[in-house]
Image (tube, rainbow, N blue to C red; front, top):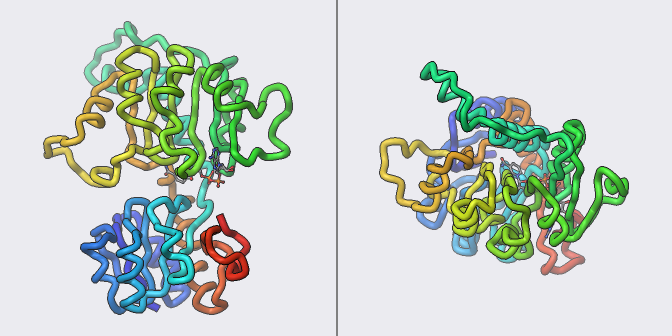
Length: 344
Ligand code: NAI
């Protein structure tokens, strides 16, 4: 089988070559992202392998189908970049539901500790032999309240780590887990209570119509002064302009952003020699209390191996059995047509 691999980065190839070779799948690596302009590159391939910032909209899906491409293999968990309603019944859409929840949860914690203990400032100061401590006062995480929105795989690992620090957890999930709330150190609450009582808020839910801009001017107004916002999920969970405004007003104490609403224009690429066109991103990055990483929370050796292995197994499942536990189905479709029972 031959798969066209879009948005290739050097770190993708070793693991996909290894697992592809084992299962006789040949990956043709393209650096470009998949979109309406580049979809022709998929001509002659059995499927496409795509990542978070590839565009799999209705036009791309129709063209893939016309060219006889049968499978869209997402090498990520989120699928907000795929028009699932349009894809339903036309083309297989497979994903990697979990590759390392630890990678993302640990990155969120790394950003939080960096921010509240000013490690990013210390690194720059001491390299310049500036050993002054002024402006470096942080705060203890112990005893603080962290609000966690989304208590799935990543959210739960994040909660476990926070509990290790002696933090109290206020959780919100549209589908709460039965075994998480202990009525004491971890409690499910309404979003309003979470916003009002949390010192730190970390987002671990998917991007859906419900969660779009879940952090906006109205929700930030409800928060404590000095709240720390962590987003390692999807950029559009946060209204970046509202966040910037609230940072300027000193309402938000710090922001740790691994994702950004307009990230597909910039993230994963080197723009160091360019003029930054996105004023909101440029202003956020200029803030001393904002840390931005470019969607790297997933990027650990363990996660890369899991991503490649699961993607290859997904492709083989569909090719040999016509079904795959990691196939995405659209709930608006015909329930009887759902082979996997994994509709969303
Ligand atoms: P998961 O599916 O295990 O958990 C998501 C949780 O969100 C579930 O408990 C679900 O019930 C909950 N949820 C769904 N709709 C909600 C709503 N409207 N309000 C509140 N909660 C809601 O997913 P997992 O593996 O924990 O991943 C979470 C998110 O992390 C993904 O959707 C993805 O966007 C992001 N992610 C980011 C990565 C990065 O490198 N920065 C890497 C991998 C995932």
